[in-house]
Length: 563
Image 1 (tube, rainbow, N blue to C red):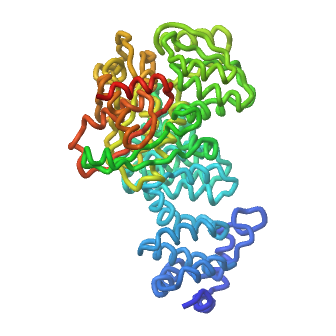
Image 2 (image 1 turned 180 degrees about the vertical axis):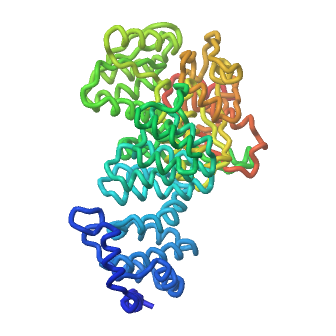
């Protein structure tokens, strides 16, 4: 059976009267969304019956059929592609689908196919394509973006629908508003409380059409109240100012689109040595190979790009790695700035910062004191303060580590990450918990500075006496209003702390087994993993090696401790 055979079959079933009606219904006139499309005049049930009878058409013939000028031919081709996808030909069909997007050019063609091909293909993969499509100038790509999430909704993954509906709320096309409202209504079917919370968020501004579709299943008095309040431009009820997970997740996916090509997709290394010690499949995500030697470059780049081309003077605070990342990005963007550092900052990191020709100021003995001074200075001078962690764009940039992991590792059971202010673990957990709801997220800290762990246990930010630690990159306090505390409370499943001896031993293990020089903050992650031991037997585990910025002298001292 060839594409021509199917077309010959369809030619004999056309109805000119129905064809004329379809051309009006699907808006094929000049300037309309379906401009130029032609129809044979065949009902959808007939088309589906034809598709069921000719399932063995080769993929090449399906794509030829998809290129037909006739709308019904393309509909049958998409039905055949869906069947082929569902019967094991996923990769080939998905890529053929994307290669033939110009022929998927009306709402019924999108709606009959994308949530059965694009949605399931991306289910356990990065979904950045949907966020790219949501920004497309092509109407049908934007509709594919939101309707593809129907597959996620049916599996209780709702964040992408909420995030994309929010992203598309300003779309000029009514067809997009209808699609967004339809998907939001489906969210409500799975969990009405999630839909209500979304609709009541004062920062969400849905078009009236999208709102009307979203609330179709609500009781009439409730629908009336929503529509009246929409007309008045006010939310039904107020909400706390805490950023909802779907919005924070959207920022991570936005960052994944924005930073593509600007950051290094760092490699993943399988560790046989750590596998032997634990019985787990263990992978190291080597962020020590990122620009400036740590994951911090991701957040700095995302934040600084978000400020536009001529931002106010930029003022940051850092214990080293965030400052290095900011200074490199500022130089690349030809901007100036000032970094506040605690007096305890490692000398080699200070020297590296001086090489970037950035203004340095020293204040306090730990990161929180430097942050407070930097924030006050920015407020006084009209500058822009950039926190190392307490900023949604910083968190989003760090979360792109997890987007890459979804591309690099097929499935995961555990993620271990070091925690200072919590930006890295918050961003990565937002992504991984959305895609892999059963994954366990483990926060790792030095015993001498585990402020976030203690704060999560207490439910409020706690103070901790300053003590020296090999993990200088995670040392110090946390701002009282930190965005990361509620995220860590909700998303981090377990906490482990490591002694200085355990951190040093872990650094030596990685150097001895893999020849990789890691800094103390990365050593914390490895040390905490090793403390889990055989609890991880049979699991797939990733450790984020967050950085490698340690002086040769300091690292040699760590190596020399090995007895």
